[in-house]
Picture 1 (spheres, one colour):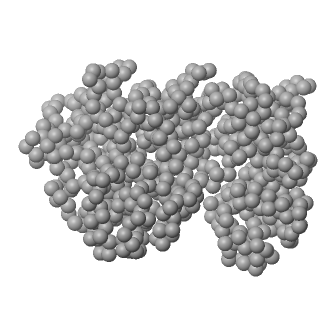
Picture 2 (cartoon, rainbow, N blue to C red; picture 1 turned 180 degrees about the vertical axis):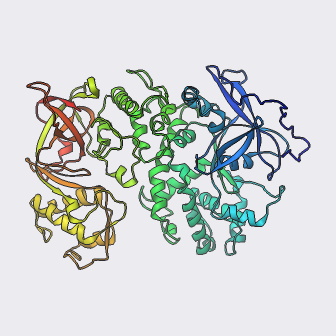
Picture 3 (tube, rainbow, N blue to C red; picture 1 turned 90 degrees about the horizontal axis):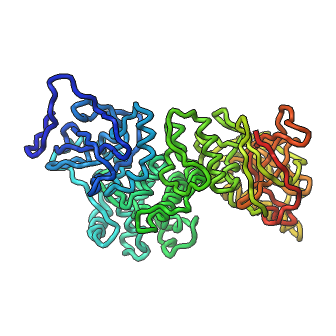
Length: 634
């Protein structure tokens, strides 16, 4: 359908066979997508234009960031009808101007997705693309019900007007909207505005707002509900969107009819973590408590996705607002994004390479979509460990893997839940053992490294025997937890049916509660608080109450009295070792079932990481004693 706008220039139509949509690209070339002008209801028509990032002056464009959702729609590109993610098609319609073209970069169209060689080359340029963009444009979603409402309302071409917010004094009209609409039913457009209004209020010291505004509970209840809907959108949990939000100097977010800076939202969400008490106190906490509570899923998304995003974006913008700091390495990025998702398993690695710039000891990883997934994960883990000279990535291992990988290579294709990620004993059990770690990659993807023997497992308890699921994000039955706690207490020499009231037993009880139960695997719920006060201890007294469990599957003790929880199965044949160097970690190893390579060399299977405690000392804060062993992990 031709544009109704007389100033638009329709794409030329070819009477004969159309030329191919994609032509080969040179080393520094990319394709721009030029959105042809038109009004809101018209089909989207675009043209591809090849440019070089080395051109002077640099080509101006806006890089797009969105989710590759399963629903499809079509747009016209160079007279070809192209199937694209429906979110992108809708976003292009939103971005289109009425009278002038708009130049953007959208990966699903600007990269020939059927050419693995080109795709790898263009993915390797993502750092330059998003650093060079005049402004990144992020599409989150339509607000709840707005798309349906627009269909019902029959929006006219001249009625669609985005509402821009800035997070500064330019938003002064917001206070007028709050007063005017605070106690009235809101249209879907006003609902979008209300959510951004909440961000603006929270970013400022909103305890200073007029009492009659904060007292409008219905207004804030709606704002909290829609804000939860916004932060739970898939865009925040995807691998690719991480670097797409970190690299650009300026990022605008499109949510419904509202457009606002990403930094305004990140600032507000950091403030929210203080308001709810998880990230330190806030002067506005008392006002926040008078408002409807923010749901646990929204808080989980804020802490699990937006917190790390904010840290890395701040780091990336420190030096002249454009250059990513040199200290960011693949280890840090893999840790920060372990709970993010991607459709292509290789993108778990490739989606982060644009942020890595400190390759010193190995060759940089180059995107290659013809490479096997297992081979890529082995290479990435090995090079990341070599670059950082740390073994912290080994702590990401569990026996549960979807791919055929060596025991020392994490299955990066597995997206961890927030509870799984939180249960990884990384920094809490990290220590420094004198000596430089030496890695050696042997044949058949075996890893040789130096370790210190800590102890053999003496007693072990399979917590799943008590009805506690091995992996769960759902509340666990109070009876199951109490039954498991009883046995764990007996294994470490504590009374099973009551807490100690005199020293030193009282101190041991306190340490056992705080270190094992609260810090690692159980959130403090009403049932757990009753357990600590001995108010609900016997089985059956509170069958309807629950604990929220982490991912503890085993509890074990060592010969020296140390004890630990683990999120994998353990047995008495397993032994605990510690790696050398900076950020060492405790690892549970099991003798490998095949024959040994020699009389003095043993092969081991890595079961997973652990965190050790001892009533007499903090095991992770003491210097390790023992001989250094050469260990081969298979």
